[in-house]
Amino acid sequence: RAPLSQEQQSANTQQSANTGRAGESSGAEMIKLFDLKKTQEKEKGTALAGGKKIAPGTIRMQKDIGELKLEKNVTIEFPNGVDDLMNFKITIAPSDGIYCGGRFVFEFKVPSSYPHDAPKVHCETPVYHPNIDMEGHVCLNILREDWKPVLTIQSIVMGLQFLMCDPNPDDPLNKEAADALSHNKDKFTHIVKETLRGKSLLVGGTRYEFQKFL
Image 1 (cartoon, rainbow, N blue to C red):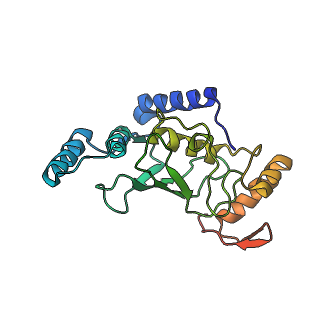
Image 2 (cartoon, rainbow, N blue to C red):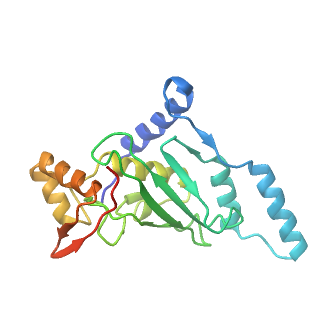
């Protein structure tokens, strides 16, 4: 796993707050995505007209999305339209670090039991990363054993940003990438940059293709 300690989570939260206060001087514009009140009124009207009850998970997602604030290098997309808040994609374009220059798409599938159960998150973009395997499974503690109902979509997005900024080789999904990072960070960085240039790579005996970003 790639656990975030309480100190790291707190630091990330404080960093996000500082970014919002910094405004233009920080260059990290924070975007409020939805007018929560209007979204709730629309859903309520639709439910009343159809005689059906809004699922608790949907109500919670209205709140999470209404309060979601993203830095300028993070975007959100609803493939089925904003009426379906339970399925969406987050794109992270790291502005620094080893993966700077890439654009990584994470697919979110939120269960009806949310927030009691965590969303399922899958990385659609092939990436050579200790905490993301070549099939796109993501190793992030708050998506698994450390998930709590008080956590939000904002918490997960911040966790993914942290993974892309500071990969953790200690308890990986991609052991080959973790070993490379642990033993020779410069060599690991070179391999990652080559994949960002679209060069294929042999991982675990299988050759994988990568998108060209650089």
